[in-house]
Length: 350
Image (cartoon, rainbow, N blue to C red; front, side):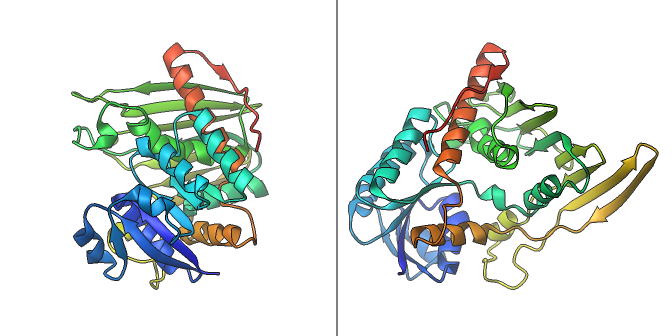
């Protein structure tokens, strides 16, 4: 069965993170893109039909999977309409900002036997896949501390919706879902968390930095993002009881896609990051070595999604994980507002 796909929205997300991967999937066909700029769409995909009525496209009978890449405020109503009209749904992050909304979407999908998943693509970054391997194999012992950061240098406010006041805007809801989802995917739900979320830029109207600490028994995880990092970003600092692992820079897939590379190209997104592994069988015996990282695998997200829709496997992000992420984000906001450590007190019904 060929899966007929309609993408709602053709900004950066629809153009870079979704259309190329739909086109790359043998069992998918990109039937429609909903955009107010058909000329822009046809510069990239001249043979794809373009419409400008999202609700009509979603409710029609010419697509099987709706990929929603619109501004955050539209995510819930559009995803709900798609599920109620028996479409599978891939929802760009952040999915929604309220736990009741994500639970309702998961419940509708469950009742109708549909696939509903969220685009947490950075589970498939090459650096995160290597970190996951180190944790699971215990090559460096047990993980004790993890710092995961997603920093940029953008000290001047830009005129775009993500940086305006509103629900789900700012860096916390933009980059927070990436680093929080990775922590939950890596270690499961924490015992507690504590967060700070701030707006530090002159004329800033939405959060531009955050710090979150998660407690897992005798393990601590610190997540953060800032728009004031002008130097090289240390993406990960993972400290184990028999060594450490440092990773600098970002997975190459986003830059490759922005530059026009496609998933099927030879040498697509060749890794550019640097990683250093410190083996420490004892405190007096420490050695360092460079590691060559493998390429990331966003194609695997879409392959898993295809398999799930065709009844051959599970969605790349489960309903339970989708719910837990929204709960974690809301709990972090509550912690930032109160200044208190918050205990994890959520058990998904899915």
